[in-house]
Image (cartoon, rainbow, N blue to C red; front, side, top):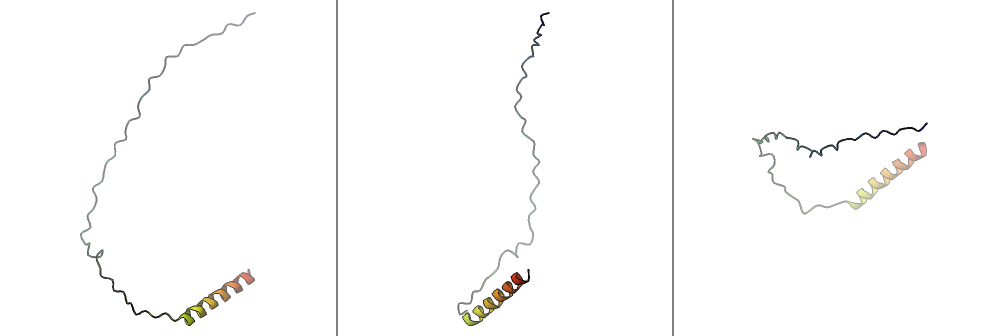
Length: 72
């Protein structure tokens, strides 16, 4: 027997543009005390760095790091 094929007609769906989401904007709070944001920074130009001390601290750090690696 021959099989009958049934074709269903489907109406095309109407395209609906996505609706923009309504966003409620919250009022921004104004800081009453803004004096913390303003400040004076004083830079001392006569900074002397003891290079020998810096190098000694670096060596100590590296030595500690190596001993930790050896322990692991």
